[in-house]
Length: 386
Image 1 (spheres, rainbow, N blue to C red):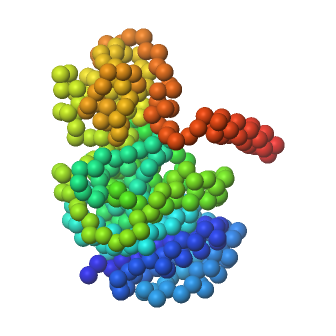
Image 2: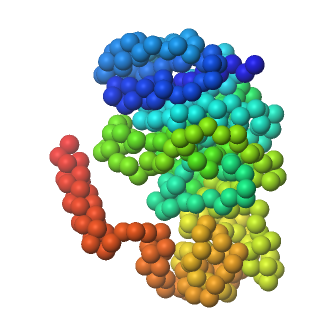
Image 3: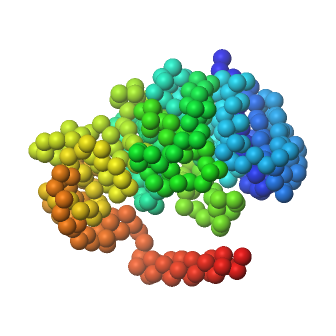
């Protein structure tokens, strides 16, 4: 039987971790013994969080509260949480601004059981992106009849690692901790330039270099409250997603059957369905986030680039890659011949905005824009006074 631990990670946010712990306490564990590790980095409010954790009962297994006597920093802290796989067969790691769905544990157990022996799987995500975090645009994965898909994008808003998954990453990390993660532009620029406290950018590099994937649910089992903290100046709901309420028996694809996306949130494995009349390697860049096009001949992008445009199609269907699979006459998506430099086309950015934004009246948009401008100015003034 797989021995699980849930690891609640905290730093200086007693209210946030109390909310997380309450959601964990109210979740369903089907009578299993599941240990709870509350792992707390050193901070000014550490003792408050210790008090919150110690007063909470945990009837599902052993409760362990570990409070570091010295500041670890996020990267070192999470690495030590992953190292708990030395004691457990699998760990579910949850940072303190998260909440879990009532049946998250059922999803974890079923997914581990299905993919535990597949070394192409580097982790299991409990969270499901509804927004591409790098470009702040909506993300809708295609569904082919199964309950999970796969992506070369590691997760920090609720993830599970088995012992083998973590050991493979840990061996790579030990050899590559000093690596220039921007080398070769195989990661999005925003990822490789996350600050030095980011453990996630190392995991991203690891999975891309080794062609591995995370398993993602179509309905999220965690949500991110984005509480104010070290990396979030003000609370917001940008990454709040709806949670799955009920339990279910998941339908899992084989690795080959799964819908897959890469680290740029671009669909992979559909090259033969995209503009089949064009002979040569084709690459999707529908979120406009790539810097390295490799040996591709054609690039399908929403970005204005200095190459010859061989086709222009309408930005119309969802998911976004369907506009390359079922092209309709119009504007918004450009097919570039990367072998033919040319003047970049003039693009109408309103097309992209109208595609991304739904059910928002222009008056509300104007109000949000004005408030955002005021907030940005005040923030800059405040930083200048420091």
